[in-house]
Length: 147
Image (cartoon, rainbow, N blue to C red; front, side, top):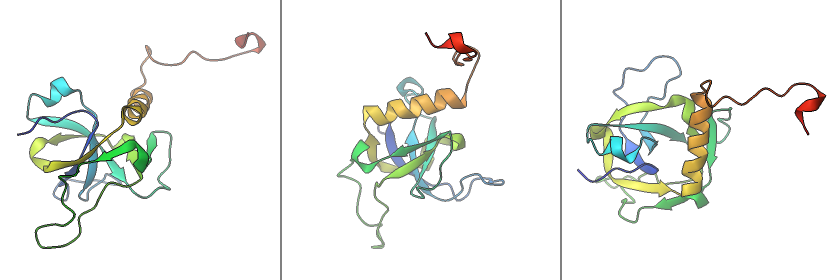
């Protein structure tokens, strides 16, 4: 199994997951957000699904322009039967749909990877998603708040 790194994008087989409500179920690209040390264990990774439906806004969703993605030249243009494969394109990272994935769901080779700037944006969205008292912003109140 090749090394899987944070910020890489893989095609994930998800059609057979036990899906409820609005959870993402179809096969789609996922960006790996788990730390490299977790990924090195070789069993599971944590991923965020991507969608090309650019109207999928919300506070926990991050737009990833194609310019912030580096395609993998080894990702084939077609499936073995000749059907065109999805390629990287401007997407929305559905951070609020974060999921643990068995590495066997990841199709090799990777589709590509995100720039360090895009990974930093995802990290901020994840911090917001998992807000704790330690990372919660201080409330701004009254006229003395801004000095």
